[in-house]
Length: 522
Image (cartoon, rainbow, N blue to C red; front, side, top):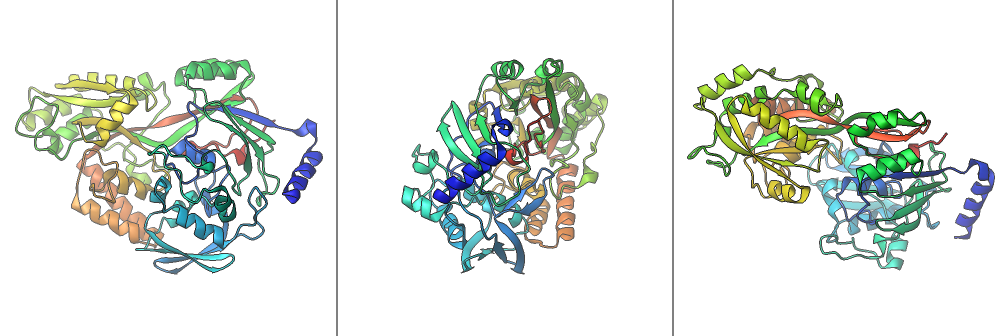
């Protein structure tokens, strides 16, 4: 502790009061916990990644780079060997070594450790020496390096001393000391934590990496109201916010002291169908399911004008999609991102007539009104477009909690959903989680229960293929199968919209994560 305090003092003296940089920022919600293993919540994990580190990490270009492991090799198709970085210490001054990796593996297998699923088919982690470990998987797992970005390493000594050897169980509303305290190896360390009010971090003077940031202190303040958040930015109370409404962009841009930073998110917004039931829950068609007819799905595809949605709803801030994976995801087939069919309402009417629905039909459409950018407005626009070709929509536009329960229990006929390929940032994860047949281990977000044996076979083969060229070819074929089947109707990638004081470098990336170690103040 004395060594750590001396290092901090030396860093403060070297920087001087004039160079101290405090960065105050906001989001629409607080983090759920500081426990790095208890959450699969994207924002919570992204925030904690500024304190805790994995063996690997993604940079702002979505590329994998070394973190706590400085290099690795594939020993066999199912065994990876990692050489741990030497000279790394936790925030309390405790040295990092292989025992901490093994402890982390054990802790990630305790009840409440929701992050475990991101690690995939790892079955064993073993220590070879103080700075060498091996990960063994049940099958070849080519995206292990991506999954280990979320293998947030905790100090064995600190956790045992604190009584935090098991993960906090958020579902059971049981906390442990690691819920509100933290001790990682990352670029920032915790100073104070006031849930739903503010969390203060300070730069870690003993971080192993060369900082790209120039911050000394970070103050995070959750502000749920979008209007209040924007007002705080305009008033100078905030340096940055990582979410502003699209309608507030002109107000921010008109302020000479502020800047808007925006780009496409990894998340693809799409419409899905109930492929499973022989008769839809919410429709006037009885005795059959119109969505099992490809012509009906194509009719809906061609009835939706994605360019009009971009222009009139999204205010020009969307990127029309031709497939279910963002082109920014690793392994996504770029050539499939063009729209499969053009907007053509006349063709849509002909297809419906050919399918036996010349007079159209009615069907329920489940949409959230507080989950995605302009979600309700998009659905209202699509309802009008489908009405023009004879598909009469029963609107089911509901708050996040109600909509989530409906989606998770398959209480739907047609629905809006979005997926970003997180946390792996790999196109295979979209195939596995969103499109593959729903089982105990796959298709977790396949809410329409689409199933195609050919796609399943290709996805499974890609999950085991360690040759990257062959893996990408398998994924391309799988996405082409789904695309040709029109199993879903992809709309667009929605925008990431951040704003800050002019001159601040935020290092925005398509995964919508603020990496504080890349932020620079003027």
